[in-house]
Length: 301
Image 1 (cartoon, one colour):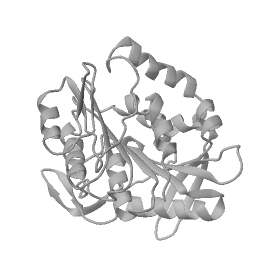
Image 2 (cartoon, rainbow, N blue to C red; image 1 turned 120 degrees about the vertical axis):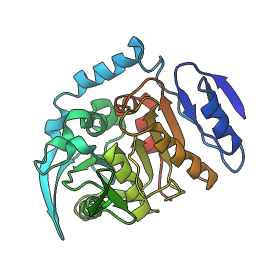
Image 3 (cartoon, rainbow, N blue to C red; image 1 turned 60 degrees about the horizontal axis):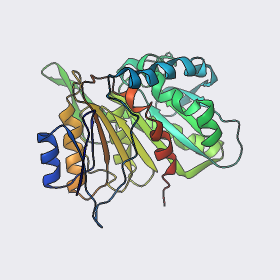
C-alpha cells in the first residue's frame, strides 16, 4: 500500500481495512497495489476544489462550451413509450464510440431541452469540445425522461418519497432501446459504448449497467442517488465515481458504500471525493482533464 499526503481532496482506490482507514483520515490519498486489485488513478487537476486555480477550470469550461448545445439534433424515439432525445453526430467517419448521458432531475420532462441545460451542460458538452472531438471523435446521446431512470412504485411512498424497486426502470429501458436503434442506424463501435450521468442520472447509470452487465465499456457516475443497486452490478465494467463530501442532496455515504461493496466483491472502481463540494460535484468531475482520456482508453473485450 502506498500513501501520499494530499490536503486538497480524497482520491481512493481501496480494499479491506484500507477503506475504513481512509474514511477516518480525510487528509490522505490511499492506493492499494496488488496482483488481484490494481488500478492506476489518473492525476487530478491541481488545486484544492474551491481554490481559484481549480474553479478557473470550471469557469473556462462554461465559456468555451457555450453554443455546443446547438450541435445536438432533436429526435424522438417511440416503442412501448415515447422518449425525446438529443443526438450529436461527429464529423469523423468510420466506427466511432458512443457516449450515453443520463441527466439529473433538473433535466426531467418532455421538452427535449432541459437535459442539455442547467447543471447538465457539463456532462453533455465536454465530449463536444473541439480538442476532445479531434482526439476522441464520438457520438453523444442525451435522452430525456419524464419518469426518472429507475423503477418506482408510484402507488406507495415512504417519508414522502416514492419507493424504488429492483429491476430495470422504464427510463433506462427506453434509453437502452434508443442506444440499440442508434447502433443500427450509425457506424458505432460496440466495444466503445460508454455511459455517464449525475444525481438522478447517476442512479440511472447503476441501473443501466445492472441491466446490461457486459455491454458498456466504462461508466462515470457523479453523486448518483440511492437505488436498488448496491455497487456489485457489472463488476467487470470499469467505473469512476465522483462525489462532494458536503453534498446536501445525496449523502456522500451513498457513493462510499457502493465503492466499498464493489471493492469487496472484487471490482476495481476509481473514486474521487471533493472536500467542501456540495451536490454540484459534476462541475469538478467533468472538468477533470484526465476523465475523457480515461473513459476512451477503456474497451469492452
